Image (cartoon, rainbow, N blue to C red):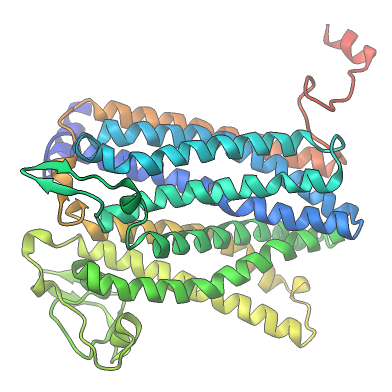
Length: 469
């Protein structure tokens, strides 16, 4: 039966035997890791704000929250280290055609990403073990290089993806890569905008997820200062990010028109070039015809081109063998935009009503919406990456290397994929068990959570030792 299933998968893939398992494994592992990467980018800044409040205002609640968040950050960092290592091996294992040819071009950002990872780990360790052992402000300062390293590492990874959308920094001569300029490749034309989109998206994810945790506590009647402050700080970060993201996304979308018209056509579900172009909400492409879409006249040109009349390129302007999977790209893009718009509207409502002196932290409907905002922000992030990556197909490197040429020919990659599924399932279960255990102990009044052999651990009572024997 297994052989029949694998045969069906092979038949579904249009290319070498390694193409479909490589796509499945990369999509799963990257989609899983990207959430943890968001915490590496955004969580240190939130911890810094909370810790600084605790020091400057002599606020024990803020200091307690900073300590708890740092402990959670350590757990997520440890798991992210495993998933990030898996991803680094996958680049060469799954895509030999990419790394074999362009390894010299992409080596610099990957090297900096590895260096950033170690710096982040070092200062996270110093910060965790510095409680009560360092002067307060020096201890707080350990978060700055930790946060900076997370941002630099993320930029390096995103710059590689931006390079795949905007290849530069090399020349191809008779199929051989020459005249490599790794700095130009790293700081390609799309790197800054694409990183800004990801960076702000990370703050949206972490802000709404963490705020949602404390909103759930408020729903259960825990209306103390701990939960109110734990909600407010990440929600402020999420607010700024939710309002900035549409602006960055709009600028990035206008650039897609100039660099990747096929992707824009899929975003807008445009079968023919239209000007002025409508905005199509929903709908799918069936046998070359758009079905089920709600059209709003001119709005497509306004959003995508910043114009009332500018045309949007259609799929008819792109060779048929270069069309991306239109329906997946379109629906993922619209889901991302729809959720982002909904979250931006939610934060605007909150602050407007707060300005009118209405406390929504006592409103169950708002708290429920905040609890839901975390998973919705994660879904928007995932859909954004689906739209970006699927919309670039059939190219791994835009107009330079097709995905079929980047993949390997090994049929054993299915076993690698199954292994990754098992490992990541184990890490997911482990993370949930550890975090829930930590939460129960905090609710029971534990001030710190440390291993019995770790720095600052309480000595084990002799009676407990005897009982354990």
